[in-house]
Structures are given as structure tokens and as C-alpha cells.
Length: 190
Image (cartoon, rainbow, N blue to C red; front, side, top):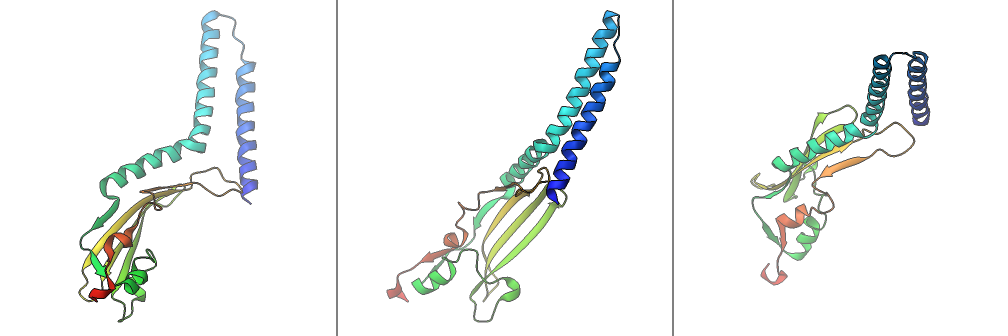
């Protein structure tokens, strides 16, 4: 289905360009100033047509990537409010699982820590712009130990059979959120 949409867009773009070109070629002025005006109008129409195509293909992605970087510079990244030293088995349970802490809605009384996650949509159309916030909370007193905020753009590409592009800030592969909150202690002290 995506391929049909993509093919339709290409055919529509080529057909529209052909019509504009044929109309422009039909009008052949004789006087110099009219020839100059003819060429200037042709350049203007080509610029508008090409600029619109560029905006559709990559311009809006570039625009929203800049907006995502600005939002990320304001409050993106990790904030640690309190670190917790854990014995090895609990460290493996919480820190090595990084993003797999139980969610606030799935927390059991036996869970010492849980995650609170929130997704906010700044823009739902194509491309989509979101803010994702994750907090690690101590179950016993509800204290927030740390929080991590990501901003992202998804989509904005021409429709087609391929996977859409995306951009996130900060890079999720470089973030070690739970490892920053939970520290590994010596087992002999516990």
C-alpha cells in the first residue's frame, strides 16, 4: 500500500511539473524585457516546485530535528537525585536490567523500586515529536531517585515500503540510567 502511495506522489509530481513546463514553453515573448520576465517566471516556478519537493522529502525532518535538539538542550538527559548502593544480587536485579524495572501500574508490595514512565506528544502528525520521561522511585517512601528525559522525532519521510527514519536526543544507547542510580556494593557488608 505504501508503494502505491509513493508511486502516486511521484507521478503527480512529474505530471504537475510537465504541465507547468508546457505552459511556460507555450508563451514565447519577442521583446527583450518580456523574455527576461519569461525566464524569471520560469526560474521562480521551478524554485517553488523544487523547494516544495525538497521540503516534503527532507526539509521538515531537518526542521523538527533542530526543534528536538533545542528541547533536549533545555531538559533532556539524566538527573540523579540520590544513589543507592545494593548488594550484588539486588544490583543485578535492578541495575543490569536498566529499563525493565516494574512499571508503576505493575508494582508489587515486594518490589523495592519501580519506574514511572510518561510519554507526551508535541506533534502527532507526520513527523511525530515526543517527550519520554522515566523516573526511578523508591517504593517505601515514594522518593524519586533519578529521572531521564528523551526527545524524539519519528517519520517525516516519503511514503514507501521502507522503514521510516527517526532521531532521538540524547542517544539512548549511550545512557546508562539505572546504573547511574544503583551502585554495586560489596556482599560482605550486607
